Image 1 (cartoon, rainbow, N blue to C red):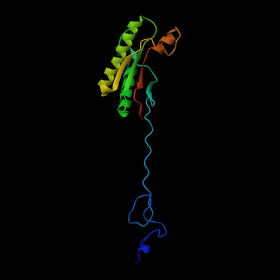
Image 2: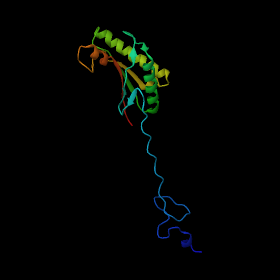
Image 3: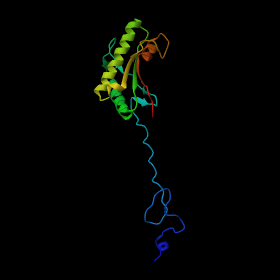
Length: 165
């Protein structure tokens, strides 16, 4: 019996794309699986350069104390997302509305950012990956002088410092 009798495809070379086996048929390299789609969360959206909150982390009035079940859920989801993006460092930004003393607002926004950092560390995120910053009322989302604008402007933001995919 000659070797061509064993070859399933005698007119095709055995070695194709770098694989070689004993079946006599040309082979192709196995295809790489596509990466899984990004995880979807209830309260947050993970973007390339930041985490966007669908709802806000809430604090007690004039305090850095995090309050509410939704706030806890947001922090749980954010910590889960950060465990999946271990290559990023996150700037945790605290913001206040325009009411009150500027210096007091700056101090309060920094304290709130620190509280969020502490909550993430408690959930297993390395402190070295988190940079708390307080902006006070310096960066309003809405410049109006209304309760709706004040509510928008009181917030915490998560921005990636080194957003490499």
